[in-house]
Amino acid sequence: MFTRIRLFLSRFFHNSQTINNEPLNKVSLIVIILVDIFILINVFTGLDNISRWHLSPAQAYPCYSEWNSYNKQTTKDKDFEILRNSLPYNTNTQSNFRQIYQQQEIGHLGKVSEICLNYGEAKDKLNNSENRQTLTAINQTKDNINKLSQANLNIRNQYDSTLLEKIAGQSPGNSINQVGAEKAKQELDNNNRKISTFKQKIASLQSQLLTKPETIDFLSFLKDETKFTEVDKGYQNASFWYPSLQLIFQSVFLLPLIIIALLAHQFSVKRGYGLIALISWHLLVIFLIPLILKIFQFLQIGAIAEFIFNIISQIFGSLLFLISYVYIFLIPLVGFGLIKFFQTVVFNTKFQAAKRVQKSQCINCAKTIKSHDAHCPHCGYYQYVECHNCHNLTYKKLPYCYHCGADQNPNHS
Image 1 (tube, rainbow, N blue to C red):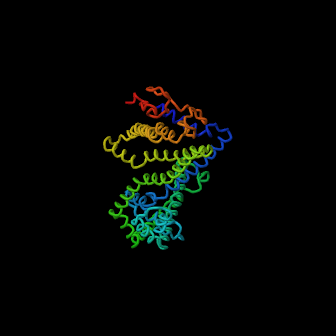
Image 2: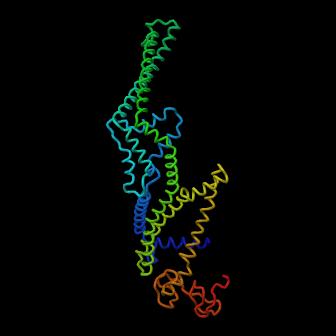
Image 3: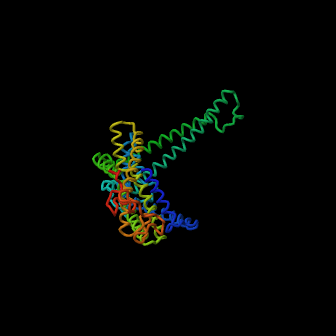
């Protein structure tokens, strides 16, 4: 196995650095590397664009996040909070949430959830000038309360200092504070009365906002467990399959490039077009690298990862670190399986040798040679080996002697 890997890597680097079995000069090698980098950047850019072609779970279910957050909140004023978050702060803004949600479909595959579109429509009904003005009034009143609370804090600091000076017997004329204790207390009481009035005003405005017909309809929509369950199920299902869809689209983007580069390389090798063979080989490697990376990424976050995660969770509970052990042992097995597949099927030396002999090509470099040439004039490879049975010369890497038909691998069985 390791010998095959070493031979594969040796062939790989040989194909990447030579033209017609001659090494590249340094300038040409730098040019090739720069071209590789440029193409690789564009390949990853294309992969990123096509991976976002299908609607993501957040785009297909744009209402899920805030709806789920609302259901998890336990505070008593959560109804007002979601109303405040649903209304723009700018009183001149007239957002159309349903239209914004539906615009996600433009240039993408997939559909936005109809429930979320209805959710956006309910938010649009909230977004009228009267409700925006009410929210603005509430925000301004809260700002006034904050200013008064800060003023009270400053007064209390001075008030405490004044009391200490009074206890120490210091005369008011020598005090470093701007207000006396009596005046400080009077200002505190006045500010507290204003704060109380402002809080009553906020409570009244909030009650006014919460009792509007459009608000009641919106909150009823939010509290409909059947609708949320359907959205939640759809979102979780989309999240499960989205990495798989991304890998499919990325493969659709890469596979034609890989096939074209492979065919161009095979054609140029047969015809002896060294430069085209070199460039097509580099392109083939560049197109394969992102595909391999995306496959490994999918194994970490895709449907297979979710399946393994669920099995580990069911068997071992919270011992989720065991997933790392699974990947540590699983990925090398997959890697060795791929190497075995390519070595025995795609790059099988005996299969390649048989095809090259039939086409009067060198067994090693696949260049066309004359019949019965002992050495390849292109790479110098010796084409024959002595048959262990009849001792005549027969082709290397072929299973049987073409003189006596004896098996050239008698120990294989």
